[in-house]
Structure formats: C-alpha cells, structure tokens
Length: 274
Ligand SMILES: [Zn+2]
Image (cartoon, rainbow, N blue to C red):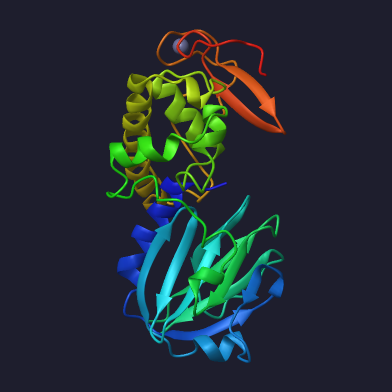
C-alpha cells in the first residue's frame, strides 16, 4: 500500500501538471471505488468545467481541490493507482474512472483489487478516515514536543502506536518498520516503557526516514516506477537478507497477517510478545 512518501511524491508530480487545468470530462467505467458524497448531483456534471486549484496529500490520501469548494479524495489501498493516459483511451478491465483535463491530458484510476476509494465531496470532514486523522508525520507543526505529547497516553507496542492514524498520520506497516530500524527500537517494545532518549530518537528517525523516502519516491515515480514500487528499503520486505547495519539476517514476525521486519541484533527486545 502506498504510504506517505509515495502519495506525497505523486502529489508533487501532479501539482505542476494539473493546477490551473479544468475538468473536461469524468468517465466512470465501474462505479465501485467512486463514492459521490454530493447530494442530488451526478458526479460527471458536478466536476465538469471545474478548475484544479491544488493537489496535495493528507496522510495516505491524495486530495484534488477544485473551484467551488469541491474535492476528490483518493485512497489507493492495496493496489490503486492514478496514471496518465489519453482522454479517449478504451478502459481496461480494472480501470474504474478517468478524469480528462482541458489541456488534453487525462488520468485513469486503475485498481487490481478494487479496494481503493475515491470520494467526491464538498466537505472533507465527511470522508471516512480523513476527519479523525492525527497530525501528519511531516507536518512542521508536529514538533518534537508535540510528538512526545501525542505519544504519552499510549502504552501499547510501539509499532502499533506509530501506525495509528489518530496518533500520527501517514505511517503504515512498511515505513513503521524502517523508522523503528533507524531508531534501533524493537517493534514490540511497549511505548510506555521507552525512555525519553528513545522517544526523541524515534521522532528523529521518523522525520529522517520519511523525508529521505519522499525524495526517493519523487525520483522513482518521475522515472516511471509504479506507485506501489519501493526500492532500497532497509528492512521491510527483506526477511532473511542481511541487515544493512550488522549483517545478521532480518527477522519476520507476522501479526494479524501483517509482517513486521526487523533486526534482532540492532533492535534488541524480548522475543515473546505479550
Ligand atoms: Zn542489524
């Protein structure tokens, strides 16, 4: 699933191309992923002629803002992607909709699993999962002090806390592994037991990993990589391979079918979860 870095990279690439363009057409091929939250308006008519004012990211959502206070909020889930195409292209099986713009360009939403969601709305507060997000992991207002404050009430396993969108938003399973590796923290340590120094290290690692990965994702996407491709991860997705720091094999523990990858040597902790 694309997380903060990939969606941020997509927003940065699309922004200069699309801001100022007007919607020439919305073609809905399969309505499944498309949710119209505008009462009494057909989505095609609601978007036609609207100008793109901004494209940005909030957590793992890509937000397209149009004049008249209308938004598209796109969550890609496991396999969604927005990709450039010709405006009159014939839809493939897993193409769900296409947005054509006044300059003749177009984007189509493709999703092999059909689990993504795109909301058309005039109120982002009504988009499920968007209203109750905590501050973005890269929000400048999320200072070290603010981060420590948000962490304070949470006593559970640190990986679970880090991926909870209400605490800090934008971090999913993959980048939580990367951040905890850089911080040298065992993913199943109890958040309440981390020292002040460890919490500060976690904040620094979070910022470092995400900023580096945004830069890499911008490069990869601009070079034609897919939204779901990630190269050069340190530990995530690399079970059994040597740890980039110490060479010991990277471990895997599956919790609720979500793999956690870490180095037992660099991230010491009790093997047994409780
Ligand atoms: Zn190691």
